[in-house]
Image 1 (cartoon, helix red, strand yellow):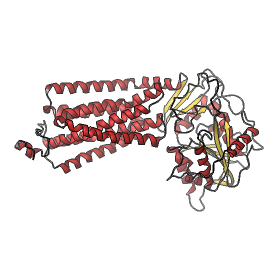
Image 2: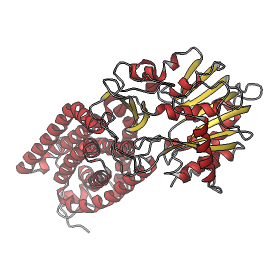
Image 3: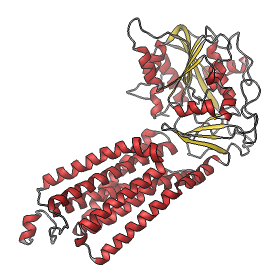
Image 4: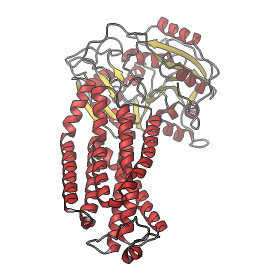
Length: 577
């Protein structure tokens, strides 16, 4: 039995020794509602910090499953530590909570900016990611014990009821924060400003609770100290908001170099383009080999990964498209991905092509492919051709909708399907290399149709490449593997960064004298019967590809074939080296 004055024992059972009910400037019922409102706000802010760390880590480091696991596991572990440490602050719960919220607002608010700075100027952000996850988790974990003490001091309530109310407000706040991040903060303010504004809301909520509702619990010295700390935190966050745009510009300059000229956050991804502004940029021999204009060769980055380089993209797109156009008719063509219009450029060089359907997830990429001067020169205005129809949709969902129209309503088959998608990996792209995905694609293939897939680097990540091949074969298609040299060291076809996490090289900077090893693009050509391999009789002149080089790449991959790998499915993804 705790020895407290009668008023304490009646008004707030279960309080620590020596703690009396709070003297509030409002009735106890209203005070309790205010505490629960602050719990709601703090929970929303806390979940925004978590989601912001996961999103930014996925963008900077790659492999969303790994990054989400690291952030969430470290944060939950740290919350337990924070809860234990908060036990020492329960006797001065109001002061402790005020200090915790000020610290959380500052650390959570600047976390995105700090992670981006570590990546841009130091080339890595993994250590900072773990550090911020640990710090934010400790501070979030310290909130609940302190809030439990404060709410018990406001109004008499049994412990079970107090816990239920506290966690109800916490979980509802987490729901609001989880929905606000992708639908409000990220598209409306971006990651940097969104995190800073969240920190400001967090600081104000904590300050109102402590400096107003529980002000009579504070000594004059503690009150002025908390007021000064919160004012400093809000000033720092406000300065961050003001400096967010120049900071992002400087960080982008550090990552992409001085030639960066387009930076767009589309809602799906960040799109950055460098070079390609000089007269004649993106024009050249054959299929459109980019020449160095005043802005250097064009390069397109999606979420920081090099996806197109005008210096060698023609080799990639020629190898992707032209073998699939051989061996049969190619009047109707479907392109999955390829929103930059470069694969479409190669397809339209065949006069017998009647229609091309492009299914691209990001409308921002399609818009740039139609309007950016450098990119339109490179793709030769292919998306403006009347034979081309673009669809903004997820490729998997689009295939599924086309394949379930019912008897007598099945969509017309395609002679050629070109899969120009990000590399497979333990990411959102995994489903685009699954058994289910290829089964849907096979349903839309004509009887003698061909499917060609960009399947990732066949040498550096051979298990990944051959898992794609095994998955395609599992739906009844026969495959011909082949590869092509010339893949840039900085090229990343998928959402996962290469080991090391180094930022991409400035395309305007001189290249290294020699590459430590030959790098390859890997492709797979598939059909219901073993497809013929080569170039079509009506193939146009190619800038950097020959039948001999194609056949050499096919022979090399056939020699390196790995058999017995299980297929990747939606339930059991297997793209892991």
